Length: 204
Image (cartoon, rainbow, N blue to C red; front, side, top):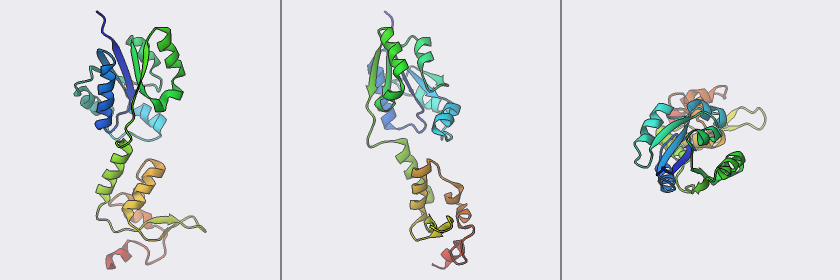
């Protein structure tokens, strides 16, 4: 008998428990699970930032999961070509992408295939893990938050911890800037009045 083929696409940049649960759910929908793993270039294109873990390394980790039978590169945001190429019977995705997959849904319906939605975790995410790692990395720093001046738009120190500032920047931009990376905090003080920079921290 033909195995029921399932496909799930994603970046899975920082692999965590919610991803494993999604793999488990997807595998339960059929017999043979294919993970269409977004390439580094694709992630850079639609997320406008570089991935943390390179594709080859992500592939090794995902292949080690007992629920996964095969990992293939996903070079396009749409998995339509992969659905056709691998003769997929069940297409699994998260509901957050539902509004972007009308073409894929129509194709699966035309071949008598199925679409299933994997639940998205409300407590585990790559973003929260990144924030925690950033806090750990910046732990111990005594810098101050830089907030924009209403007059000049330049940074001014209004108190607080550099960790909180870094996390706020990550939430706003999705990346840590050189100004808040450990070892480069001095960049954040450029152009500030005397007594406001790193030297002033040493006396406290």
